[in-house]
Image (cartoon, rainbow, N blue to C red; front, side):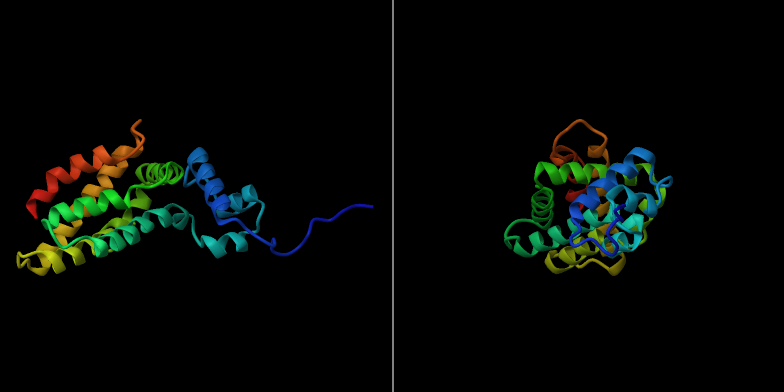
Length: 193
């Protein structure tokens, strides 16, 4: 008697297992070379099950990076109202990046994929960057300087780009945590605020 494989959706799909397997495959074979069908097969699920979590390969990479914007937004809301805007912003960014080792490893992989695939970098451009939007709202609400709309957008984009640059630099380094890269980039930019 031959056994047939069970049909239908698995009873439980571990999102983190899917993420980890997908990122490993994308890093090993290259972002452009891997299809969603290959990712689904590597995890042992259907493409439609994969699409429930990640409709596109880009979302596999960007999911964790968008989480940074949400963590920063939450941290800025809890930020004490004393101190300069630049000091509060820097401290909040550092806390938002204080991740467990396992998540830092996933973040590093995602950042290397972004670094090595210019098509993944487009999401951050032209003011659509969620990180820049969070930073802009914080500067606008807390700065004593009356910036124009254009100045606010430029400052927020500049700080977000400094964070992105620091993280990309860190992803290619041997350092365990991104703190020194963040301090270098923000130390150069934040005095403008």
